[in-house]
Length: 303
Image 1 (cartoon, rainbow, N blue to C red):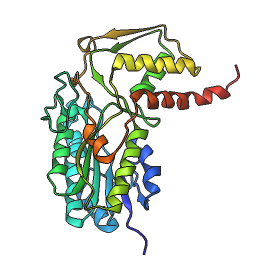
Image 2: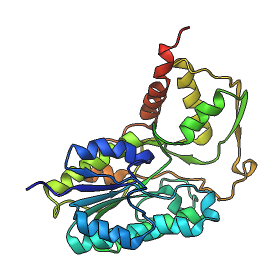
Image 3: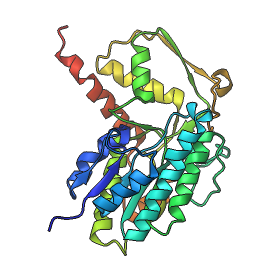
Image 4: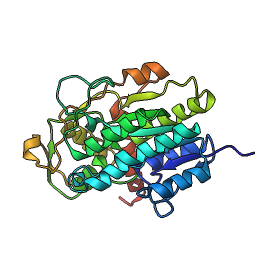
């Protein structure tokens, strides 16, 4: 008899793209495309779960357009709040495990220290409120579940801040970047590797695995401005064709957006590191690797 599969939702997205190959090494993986499974249809979702009977669910599906969430609140709530709750309740009823991802945006961004898991959430925008509702639904469901809060996610796949900076830097002479919001850029590679380790432990000893809420972020901290400066420095070293001549720091008030952002997005990862014996590398490591990989095709061009 073949092993029950792992169900990955959001497999074509930024995080799912990094998760899929690592999860597939541990068990048969089912990662339905959007056209195959409408996550907005709760009845269809439950029917798919009842048919598939996965041993575990990794939920990388989410509504992540922070500014658009201010007006597309119903869609954001469906994907970020209702969907995780439905997955968790099914998992609880059928003895399956669940890994769900949340965000630093569940906090209001005040204070001068990294946020801990026992700090009270207080989201300041619609996206954060929907994500907080989703993580609460998972944690309250009774499911054997991990909720992993991740900050400033980026990767090789899909749009993100790092790739946007490279794109804009290739065509603009001057860029202005917010310098008064602080966090830790966290690569999809790190999140996928940690998730795969948690899956391994869940499959090996599900009843002994210390599930719950954990913060997952690369070590260290930086501002969006300093993050961009580091990206451009590595891009120049790699031969990226930059038109950029000046990078200027600005305040959040100089960059109006539909959704307010927390100024302090730092996450304290002590609980995750000590519970599972993990070393979370400095944020610069994976950023540098990502820039190098994106620049690699340039080395094949004639000089």
